[in-house]
Length: 318
Ligand code: UDP
Image 1 (cartoon, protein in one colour):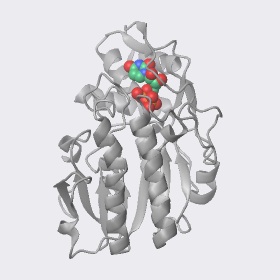
Image 2 (image 1 turned 180 degrees about the vertical axis):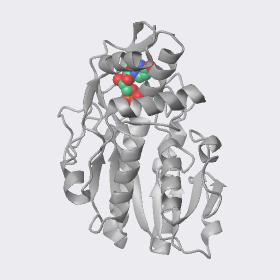
Image 3 (image 1 turned 45 degrees about the vertical axis):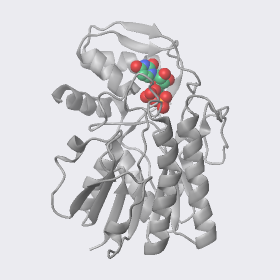
Image 4 (image 1 turned 180 degrees about the horizontal axis):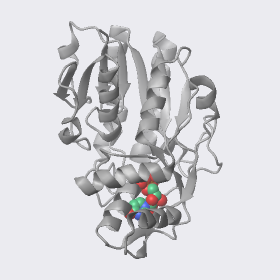
């Protein structure tokens, strides 16, 4: 049996990835310090072939793996919400966010070299900042503020990419970088202030739906099962060593369109209210996924309305 380490395994994407890998016959070690992850996400996981270790990967660790083979390392550990009102956002954890994507990545890369494990770093569409090109291709270098409120996330993801490539070039580490665009679905944190969970929670409780700015900014939303499929392909497809690839759904929507769609599906009586746009909020975001199609034979399959139905069901039940 092959061993996999998933850093950030109690998070939204991480917990789905753990489940999927266990079901495919791997033994999964899940590392998480629960800054933005939640043990509740692990409650339905198979108990066999799974070990959860509460751990901060920015601190000394690795001893627990001394006598073990590790075949694959997925680094998904990081807060990812920019919402300053949420205690789980990277704005609320600026230093931890900087460190998990820098020191944490460095620590995992060392383990990968020692174990000769294959490595995947989850970067983000945020490395494109407020893009001046749309859709965003992997070659686009971005438009990022080096010191604005979002910089703790954007710049540390950029650093994470740089150090991953440095290990690849210097030590020949078998590694790849994925850039995850907005992703949603069951297990997303109900209270991390991101747009899909906020709008659904507001709609199902008939509270005002809070659109920031005039709602003309765009995002492109990928359902979680499509994202997990893409992440596994990025790791397990031949010839992905050293590659950087966008993963996301190119179906672009304005935030106002999203608000109205969620209102319609939930048959909500909520009004849309407009609030201040957060500083440095990107105006456009849409992945160019031609590279993922070409090298991974991957593209999202779940339409937004169908994914939203499932997410609404999840958020209604918890
Ligand atoms: N947003 C909004 N209302 C909310 C939460 C978010 O209008 O209650 C907007 C936010 O300003 C941004 C978009 O929705 O333009 C996506 O925000 P999210 O926090 O989900 O993630 P981002 O894509 O900005 O990282």
